[in-house]
Image 1: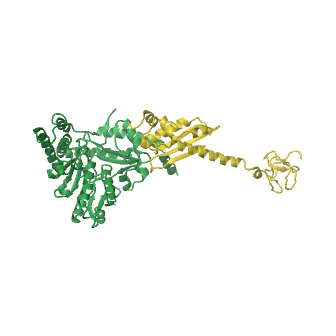
Image 2: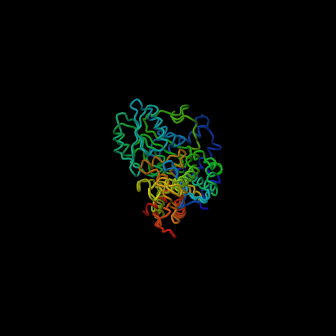
Image 3: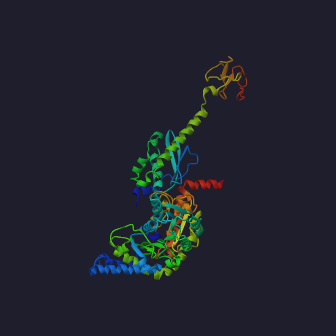
Length: 187
Length: 393
């Protein structure tokens, strides 16, 4: 047999095969011309790989490599998972035939791509969630930027307070919030 | 576990009758055919008897048969030897796009020696159009090489017609008949070829024993120089046991070929008809009718050949694939690509080639075991998931 027992075990009983529909990160490497296509799906919780699934089009080695990567990475922190290399995967599998080392041994790359994809997505989410404070609050009168904790607009000097409903700055003596329409009680 | 061997194209089992006649030449009959003593003469007589038997199988003269070590050697010998012997007339060689590597790589090497090579395309069945050969021949052309049948896709080429075209243009014509000889009737006189290769391990003979037919009066440049073996054209002490085995296998093939074909044809058809009923997205590769009687080849979409071979092997079934992952060079079969099959689909190549011992139970077993293998691998395949997604719209 050209493959080690461990490779054959992972080929026969691959761990974590499948797709995560609402994955936090997806990574795909390879193309059918050179042989293999690997797709990794990850779920991240508290900076750890809570769940991993993969799909692989390719030879026995490619399937075993993907399975081994998923097993090695599951439960690891993102930093730890990024340290998994193609070489260490091959070693864990008890070695791979020489000619398979480059084409089929792309599992770690696919995983890293999924993690990068996750980080990229997180970054975008963060940006959406916390746009720079200059964009966040605007004076309801002059539309000038208002810092979060300021109680007056620096531009037009109007006294402000945050609306208890939407958090946007509202004129202190105004009954109705211009942002969300909430009425202030007791004015 | 049931053992089902469906890899005829890699090697056939050795017929016990062949083994029996070989054995004495591996033991007590060890003489060198070039020796004058009776031990040597005994070996020489056996070699010459085999030459006669091989000649009879392809309807040639015994003096037109040269023993070699493999089909690849025969192909190298023919392509290089015939081209070099004719190089004063021109330096253009024509081959088909579906030749065996031993022809393809020989031709590529000849380019380094100043020859030019043209490659004739094939249709979707892997069939060469003789007209294309005709169009490719120039005043510089000295040799055309088109295989008789493809082991990989099973297609039988219109070699007789191509040979006629070459003869009318005064161009030598060689055919790699390794997959065909011993399995289908091959008559060098009827085909009108100038050279033809054959190998024992394709018709129940031993490995390492093959032959090259060169039509009487044709000049060939030798590749292995030394002694006067094989008429001085191929030096080296004869592989006597192998040659004796090849002769016996040829003898048996001549007598039993029809019987074998009558048995294997329906089994092959059973596989070709029923496999696509059991698995969807299966493509038959090669010509649906003009194909080798023992060969059924497919591309199974969305999955890769080596993974299928490993899974089949776990079920006791031996087969072949032309996928990139199974080749040491990691390149998809040039034959499938030449037929216009995409890289992704070519990766799913699978070749089942039947042997004499194959039974309908074997084929039924394959048809039972194989669909779950495909299903399992498709479940793992991102290409299949994508296809299902697209299908859903």
